[in-house]
Amino acid sequence: MIAYLDLLLRLVIWFLLTADGSLANIIIGICVALLLPRGYTASSTLRDWLHVFWEIIVAIPIAYKEAVEIMLRPHHQEAIAMQRVKPNRSPGLIFLDIFLITFTPKTIVLHYHEDGRYEVHQVARRKKP
Image 1 (cartoon, helix red, strand yellow):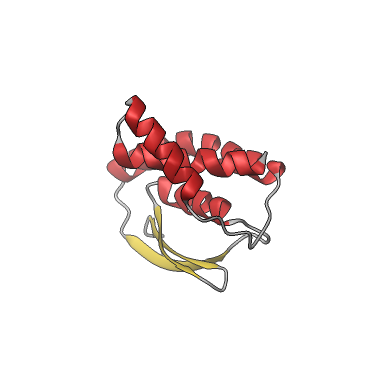
Image 2: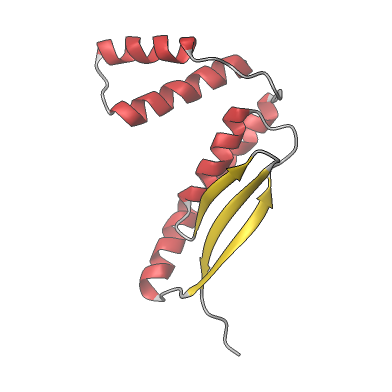
């Protein structure tokens, strides 16, 4: 089941990059997704995948809320924070974690460190003294 989710993730990325739903592009995308090398460094479970998909669904209204907040009340405070990668994450789940962090308007991942950390840029409202 996890192999199918990895394949599906690769196909979704392919379709987002090409923005073409033609039959030829679908066949090319399937071939590319199947031919790309797979790293078996960490195993993921279906529960991990479902949890990440749920987090993405929850992040959609939060992203809209943050976008409205930034438009109505500008955020002038910036910070760079280091966040740890959750343990036993496969490369596909790490990609989805980075996507989730970057999806919300107030945060963006600047760099993924191989030792298991994300460098995250955050904007915030200036705190009153």
